[in-house]
Length: 462
Image (cartoon, rainbow, N blue to C red):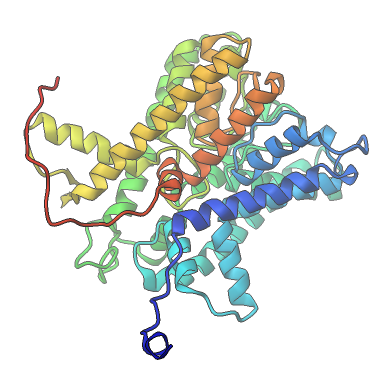
């Protein structure tokens, strides 16, 4: 008894941040599912069937935009507000919202919560997590209010002011959170050549997809160049390598995607063909931005050429940037992989990006994320081909869109079977939380180091 009393206390175990993220998203999806099954959520007064409610709640919380029922005609105001709340919470991040609420009511923020929020927002420095979380809320609401004001002004010419305001708020939140939900029933097909609507949505989508860490740094620093020291961007006001990679890669993907879509679709009578030269450029630009990972569309996705669909799937797989409202493997992961391939072809051991050396753990993690992502997509596509009566390209497009939390579809989503809806729900969840995060959350913790290693022997590759 004396020995037990004198025994030193066991160190407190810090919860796995990955498991906290996964648990937080599952809790939000579960609550949303219950609310959408209530009679008050749907116009017919019956509520959604359980599987449909789970699908819609997952799509909203994971800011995807795939729907099995029409949002505008199926849900009551209560149902739409439930969806909007899930979109906002999912866009900001479950742990970010929880942390901000705890801070607002004066509760002490634990280390585990701080670690989890830092991982979710892509914040490498623990000391700046709380400030970044506050900046996230400020940036989000400022951008959404500005977008809502512009859209309300535009739509007040078509709808009563109160309805225009509601439409403006709903679609501004949906666009900034890269969710892709709309209340019109056919996305933005009625505004293909409306410059103000297109540019407003594009600005919200791109801003939300850059990542909160990048936005916070850009607003606090102005000089575009390598930083000094170990702090992000250094103290001289220059942008960090991460921010420069995100900005340059996003610009290249948007510009390249626009040019390729113009090339493949300029004469397609079902998409860009009937539009003026300026309209073609605007529509191509919108379709190049929305796969990363917004889900809105101004032309018919089902009528795009197969070559264009392949480009869109590539953009959907790459996705947005870390710590953003978007999904995919992320732009920085893509750059790390390309840089590794370039270094290997040049027979160099070091992987260099922007005049900096990337640590081996970054390149290894990038390959792991991409490999897991491809494995998930191939597995899900195989299963959906077995459960759904649809062409291969349609199924593959649906799978990549769900994994990238994009929300674009060739029309398969409402026709999915029960098994298909459950499978796509899992895909959306994995895509939003991140395949690597899910893998880490499910993995058992093992000793991190050992004093020995197995004998080395080579195998022939290539």
